Length: 135
Image (cartoon, rainbow, N blue to C red; front, side, top):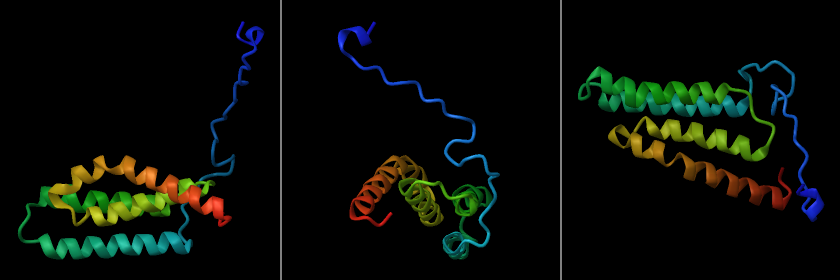
């Protein structure tokens, strides 16, 4: 009915279960230099934060505010890179946020609330890089 009034209807896109990575199996990227450097940064931030807060915080607080963000950051660092530049930037910025989150302590929850701003920043950086031809 909409096509009769001059409005073009977009065709339905059939997205398969393997979108956006393709049909190849997803494997950790252990030998990727970016992944190794990012995980090293997360690990260093974790150990520094543990050294700072070891005697003063209870184990539950250390687990929630230092260990869990570090595990998430290392897991995400070695996860397969998305095919799009903007998605790769979002992934790397999120890993950096996990590294800095180990120092956040009680400010970790507000940092998590700021993740949408971080993802918007990655989109802006990605669009700028693509417009300059660095993709």
